[in-house]
Figure (cartoon, rainbow, N blue to C red):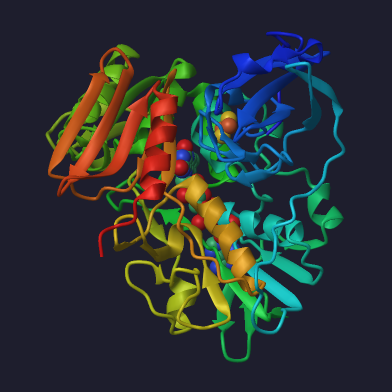
Length: 513
Ligand SMILES: Cc1cc2nc3c(=O)[nH]c(=O)nc-3n(C[C@H](O)[C@H](O)[C@H](O)COP(=O)(O)OP(=O)(O)OC[C@H]3O[C@@H](n4cnc5c(N)ncnc54)[C@H](O)[C@@H]3O)c2cc1C
Ligand code: FES
């Protein structure tokens, strides 16, 4: 994603700030010349880094300091205050660092420091170092892994196989700004095309793996090419469910996963006046919001009584429905489509809806076929241990396909979140190099509807109580999902600091044994 220039504001930090005015854990946003710079105090030390997150330009000064890191308020990326490194996705690029001097009780920010990559200290790598790592998947987890392998200094071969025609993209954007027509296509690639050659990552697009053999350690493609590996990462993600009813295969009935899918919806949207979105899930409703931004009339048809109720509960479900209704979306809940007859969608309840475009947002299924055929252990996903290793010792799995033992809930969980997939890719990369790092990040996702972002930390499949702090209707709330007296997850709207604090609290707590 490209970054827009943020005008520099706040104090000129080269003139200094009184040290006594900056409490431990506090930050001030100012500038050095035209550069927005964040001055932070942590544990008696002072740090100055770029004030803008490298993900979507979030204001880091509105985030939270944790040790010698700062967390972004918008989507919880984490940067080192010492080196500027993006320690946790969704940010992948570092922020710049400035030298800081304490003189006569004043903290003065001096020149920009040369980038120094973080050295991760004496972690013990075990086993023989791999020469060649193959990654199946060019999505979040696959990209996170490949990028981290090089960041860790891995000098061996990296092969990335993807059956997509596009190099890794910022998938969340495909149902938000890009689909709405508010972002140019050059925001969509995670990295420019030359990145892969520059980093020595052998990226094969339109390359579908049809077989993996964990014993002989080889991957076979549909075109019969084979790739040998020392370590393999399966990061094959998920694919949209398609409903089968008369007319469901018509050319104006589309799903959304890839850049090509998104381009196809945009193409249809150019001439469409009315659209039907099937499914009131995150993706379905984000698509509805994006199509409203294109002034298309939208009907949402879904079997549930309230949108997103299974994940967010009734209070937020009602809010989301009202929000979309305010923007002109018409809901047909507790209903389904039984047929599409040309430009008319037929409802089970009897009526019909005009539709020049139908988007199916009816969930996804994990792409586990390769793992299954190879005899890897499965349980509604590919089973992995805490280090993301599958039942075959040299084969790891990450992202939407992986079911891992979550230390926070004490359960094996599988989630479909962008940030989790990137972070799992990174952990898998380090473990493929022989480190023994458990994946213990607290799950996080966000969803955007018009100007309302919903952030969610933790994981709650069931709860016995929902506590609402604040006013959901006023878009100022923290919603806690509590089971057995423990807060398992926290959703929030415009309460970014509370969301970050909830993440820190969840990190400190492990599930009771
Ligand atoms: C439109 C959209 C918007 C989203 N928005 C959000 C959001 O706002 N917040 C959020 O948290 N999450 C969001 N998500 C979910 C998030 O994008 C996924 O959880 C994430 O992409 C999962 O990453 P992954 O690497 O596991 O899978 P993917 O990103 O799907 O990547 C899988 C890759 O594997 C490749 N592949 C699969 N099988 C094979 C094979 N046999 N051979 C070769 N290649 C293969 C695919 O081509 C693809 O490149 C969104 C998803 C979509 C579709
Ligand atoms: S803008 Fe900082 S994490 Fe997204």
